[in-house]
Amino acid sequence: MFINVHTHHPSNSKEVFEIQNKYPTDIDFSTPFSVGIHPWFLKKETLEIELFLLEEKLQHENCYAIGECGLDKAIDVDFNFQKAVFIQQIHLSEKYQKPMILHCVSAVKEIIEIKKQFSPSQTWIFHGFQKNKQLAESLVFNGIFLSFGETVLSKSDLQNVILDFPLDYLFIETDNSEVSIVSIYQKIAIIKNIEIAALKEKIQVNFNTIFKK
Ligand SMILES: [Zn+2]
Image (cartoon, rainbow, N blue to C red; front, side, top):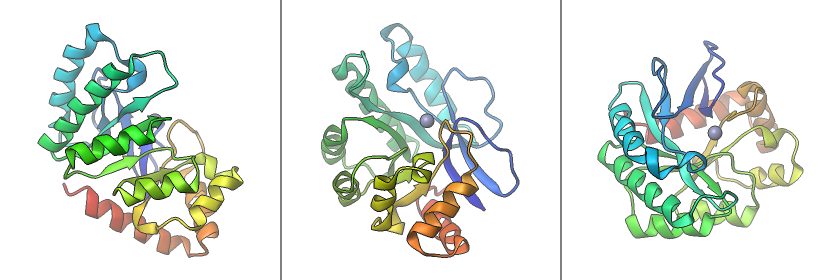
C-alpha cells in the first residue's frame, strides 16, 4: 500500500491509502480524512461554529488526524489570533487522540516553542516540507515528523535534505498536486537507494505507530 498522508485530490486507487484534507464545513466525510481550521481561512465571525463542527468531525470513524492547521507568517491574518486557534486545536488533538498535520510557513521556531510548552502525546506531522537540512533536523530533534511532496521530484536542495533524512520520521504526500503518489515514492526510493517495497514498508510502520486507531 502506498500511504498518502495528505491530499486534496484523492486518487481513489486501490493501491493507495490516502488521508484527504477536509474543512469542518465540508459535507462528505465518507472516506479517510483529516480535518482542521487552516490559518488561511481564519475568521473571528466563523470560528465558533467551525470549532463546534470540527469537534464533531473529530469523533467520526473516518477521521485520522486533525489538520491541516498551524501558523503562517506570509498571510494577512493576525498572528496572535492564529496562535490562539492553533493552541485550541492542539487541545482537541490531545482530547480525541488524533495526530496533527501542520501547515507552517516561516514559523518553525514558534511551532517548536509551542510544542515544548504543551509537550503533546500526539504526533505532529509537518506537511509539505521544502526547507533546508538545518530546519529538518531541528524539527526531528523535537519529535516532529516531516512529510514530503511533489517538490521532491524537481528541487535538488530538497533531494539533498532527503538523502540524510531519517526514514523513521518520514511521510509522503501529494497535497494539492495532481502527480501520482507512486512517482514521489519512486523518487525518494532512488534518492535513499532502497527498494520501493522497503520504503513502503517503512512508511507503513511509521503510520501504524502514529495512527493507532
Ligand atoms: Zn494541504
